[in-house]
Image 1 (cartoon, helix red, strand yellow):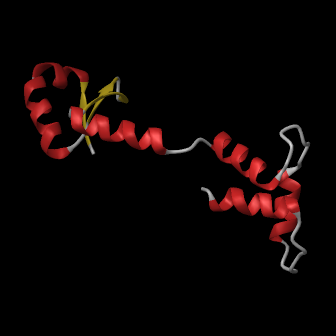
Image 2: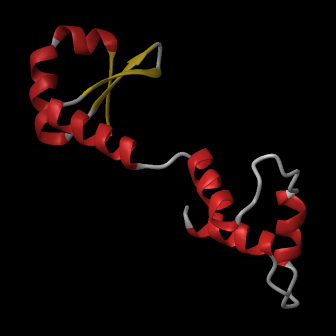
Length: 107
């Protein structure tokens, strides 16, 4: 990862623009903390496409609820059910178990 301070980016912007074409994103720091990124337009567009394709956790949960017929307003305790799933004894498959397994597979 290339990281440079703001003053360096300001003084040698053209150099870092070309460098980002060859080596990928250049991170610019402000007071030692990452603040900005220089990257090629092609890299930016590719990253935006990946972001658009990824589902949010909320969308995955909604899909799993619909698939397993669980009402959106159910007060389902995920943590309690996950504790049961982690137990070593085999369990009978329930609607909630299938729901949780579906969530875990979609990640």
